[in-house]
Length: 139
Image (cartoon, rainbow, N blue to C red; front, side, top):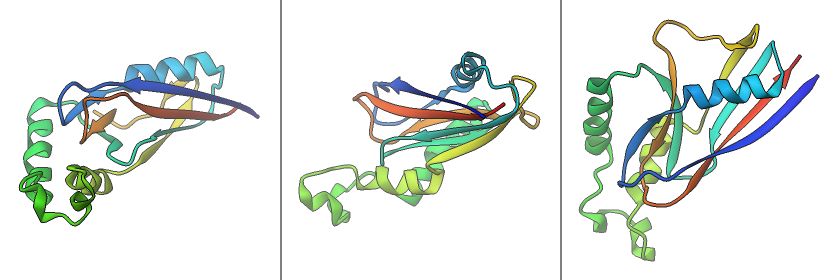
């Protein structure tokens, strides 16, 4: 069995954003030499997420509004976590809802998706470098 590990780095300039990383993950799969197996993609930071959904701007806007209703950033004083001097408690909650990781099947050297599926990096407390781990196992 082969295995492959690579880190992808992101620096979203705003507080929040979504980045389609499907191409980069497919590049990792190609680089790995694995034709059939599993691809794990996970955010290595507790205020960021990796998820699968449609790459449609209206949906991304809806995510932004929905997440802000679930865990509004302000007032920052509403969160006990922020009493430590942080201002990112909402980002921790948003990450919990959106998820830490995805696993995608690799078949014949390609990511094996359903219709419209794409992999996204979700940033909820940006303006600094963060990483995503891609781990691939298979034959």
